[in-house]
Image 1 (cartoon, rainbow, N blue to C red):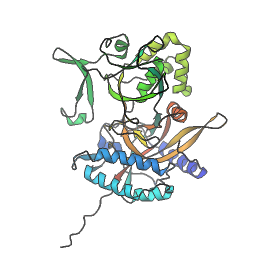
Image 2 (cartoon, rainbow, N blue to C red; image 1 turned 60 degrees about the vertical axis):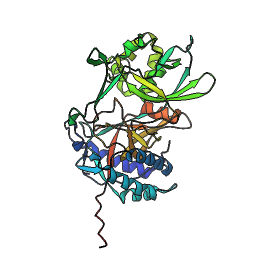
Image 3 (tube, rainbow, N blue to C red; image 1 turned 135 degrees about the vertical axis):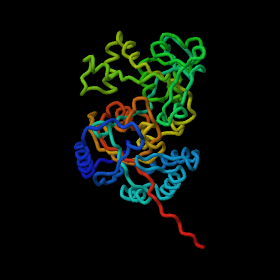
Image 4 (cartoon, rainbow, N blue to C red; image 1 turned 30 degrees about the vertical axis):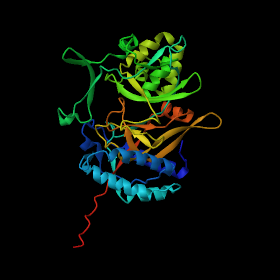
Amino acid sequence: MLSRPARRLSLVLSLLLCASCARVQRPAVTRPQDALVELSDSVKLVDDGETAGLRVALAESLVWLRTRPADHRFVYGPREVTAAQLVAALERLSARLTDGMSSLEVSEAVMEDFELLESAGGEDGQVLFTGYYEPTVEASLTRTEEYAVPVLGLPDDIIEVPLEPFAERFASERVFGRLEGKKLVPYWTRAEIRAGRLAQRKLELAWAKDPVALFFMEVQGSGTLRLADGTERRVGYAASNGRPYRSIGSLLIQEGAIPKEQMSMQALRGWLAANPSQRERVLDYNESYVFFRFLQGAAVGSLGREVTPGRSIATDARLFPKGGLAFILTDHPVRMADGSVQWRPLSRFVFNQDTGGAIRGAGRVDVFWGRGPAAELAAGMMKQKGRLFFLVPRVRAPVASSR
C-alpha cells in the first residue's frame, strides 16, 4: 500500500475526524444537489500516496469524461459543471503533475483549479469507509470433481432497464429482469441459480473449487482465476441479477454467530469454513448474484475504465459525479513485520470511478486496493469513519477579447 504514516498526519486526521463527530442526526440524502455541502472548517490536504498512481487514475477518468457530450452537466451538490469544464480542469492538472512531487506540491497543483465541497454524510453526518480488492480464485476451464462450482457469464435473457428516461428522479437507477410473456419480472435469485436454473445454457466461463471464494469474488466485482497449470485469467463484472444486496455479515451478527466488533471478511471466511452445513443458507441470504466476463487487462470499474489501487473509489452513482476528483480522510490497516496489524491514517486524492450494490447514500465509500495480501487485508478489515470531499472546478473568468 502507498501510505506514508507520520505523527503530524495522524494528529491532523484525528482533529478532522473529531470535528466531524459533532454533526447532528439528519435525514438520508436522496438528491445529488444535497450530497455535497460547503465546508464548515478548514481542511489541510496531505496526500500520502505516490503521484504516479494519481496520474494513472486521472488519465482513466479523462478517457471516460471525453466520451461525454461537452454540455453534459455533472452535479456537485449546489454546483453544476459541464463535461467540457471538468475535462479542461483535469487536463490542466494532468499537465502540472509529475512523478516524485511532494504532498504540498500535489495539493498546490490541485487547488489552482479546484475548490472543496464536503459530503453531507449519512444520517449521522459521517462517512463510512470500506475497502474492496481483486481476489484470486482457484479455477479450471473444464469441470472436474474438484472444480465443480460454475463461474457464470452473462445470460442472454437478462434485461437491463435504465429508469432515468421514465423520470428524472430515477437518475442512475436501473433494474434487471427477464420476460414472462410480455411482463418484465425479477430475475432468478442466487438460490434459484445455484439450484440449476441456468444449467445447460453453456454460460460457464470456468469452474471454481471453492463456492465461498467465488461468492467473495462476486462481492468484490472482479478477480483473477488461477488455473491448474499456473496461468491466470482475469474476470470482471458483466451484470447482476438485479436482486438487492444483503450482507451475510449483518445476518451472522443478528444471529449472534459473530460479534459485531469482530466482524470482517476474514471472520466470515473462518465461520463459513467451520460451519459447512450452514454455508448454502447463509450465502443464499444474499439474493444478489453477479455474472462475469473475461478481461483483457486489469480490473475495471463502472465507467468501463481500469481502476487504480489506492486511487479509485466507489460511491453512490446517484449522488456523486462520476469520474470526479475527490479527497478522503480515514484509516486503513497495515500488516507489520511481526504479523500484527496497525491502523494508519489514509489521506489522499482519489477518483470516483466505480459503484456497488452495497454502496448507497452520501455516507458510504469503498476504496479499491488492487491485488495481493495487503489488498485483501485492507478490503477485509476496513470499516472506518472518515470524511469525503469532492473537488469542483473553480469558476474561471472569461478571457477578454483582443479586439
